[in-house]
Image (cartoon, rainbow over all chains, first blue to last red; front, side, top):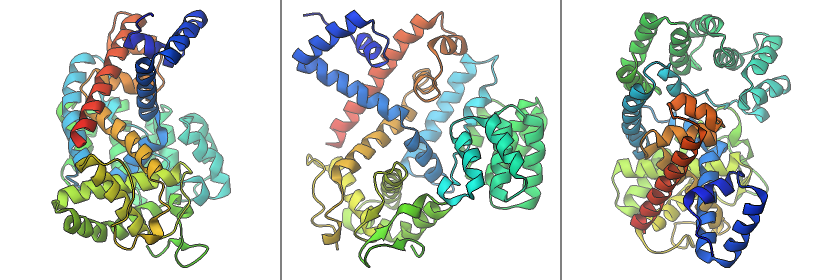
Amino acid sequence: MKDYSTEDIVRYLDGRMPENEKKAFEQTASENAALRDQVESYQSLIAGIQDKVMQDVREEVGSYEKGSSFRWLRYAAAISILAVLGLYLIFIQEPVYDKYFTPYPNIATLRSSPGEMDAALQAYSEGKYTEAARSLEVLGNKSDTADFYLASARLFSGESETAEADFKRLLTQTETFREQVQWYLVKSLLDQGKKQEAREQLQVILSDPGHSFYLRAVTLDEGVL
Amino acid sequence: MTNMKKATSSSHTDLSDLTRNGRAREMYHAYRNKVMAWTVKRFHVSGTEAGELYQEAFIICYYQVRSGRLTEIRCDPGTYLIGIIKNLMKQQRSHQPFLSLDDVPDTSSVSNIAEKEIAEAYNILRVQQLLDRIQDPCRTLLKLFYQQRFSLEAIASRLGYKNANVVKKKKSQCLKKLRDLHSRTNQSEE
């Protein structure tokens, strides 16, 4: 009976195993409990990594605790600092700051949104930022929530200059997404190469240890700016 | 939680509107101090540990709702969160598997909590927490491939690997590392 390596198991789970080899693999797994256990274990691991709902929930709930010292936030901070240092070496020529600006999750969930926003927010949730931006533009200035997601959609579709103007306007007109706006404004500035202004904006966040994005700002400040 | 809808009877709580804008945050803060105080008293843990447990329990509950696995509970949300914490403590502190919630206060109405689903959600949470703990390049590589759906070629280019085959091999090594970490933490929790 052939011995299968971790690489073989992962290749099988990624769907990259040729058909004849796949049949032989499945045959072996059906007769070999140890191999079967390993396959199930890696399958569960990969499903866990990929689970988008959990990613979104963790990000959202994490933002509820300002300045929290809870365990996973501590892990995240510690690892982020290591990650920044590592990434700085790896990506010295790359815009490493991108790693710290994952799109803000869609927490204005569909059920609570006016019907006409559904399609736009759905597109946003699926990472179709250009489509989301166009849909939100059509809706016009309906609410702070719509404005925030429009600015975010523009930012992640590469329209950083427009996004910068959106975020700056939002800062003057609403408190609802103030901390998020401050954070993503930094990205819009970095995207345009306005490093000095980005640094100044980052200092606003760093001056408030209770800020929802404080830990990320620290890692960004230490590793990139 | 003033806005949580009482559904079919006074002992049922409809969680379906938890996903509406701001409701989850509202519920999180509504039960936070009460549940944390109970956790400190019941399990003799520090405030920080109680906070960690509360956050994990809330993530699990909210995950169940957001993923459509839970729409209604036969108790108030605070009791449900306590039930989850008790399960987490069982898994973290003893050899006992996820089982009943018999000695959680006022939990006769919580007996329908699907412990298996709580365990599954917790497992997913643990995997993602551990992924945040492993060092780069593994963390970035696995996130790029499995969460951001980058191709092996794109990852090779982005992370400076020679080609897709090298990334493929590295990815397997990273998964093995994560699996070993997962096994070790499971054992230490037992």
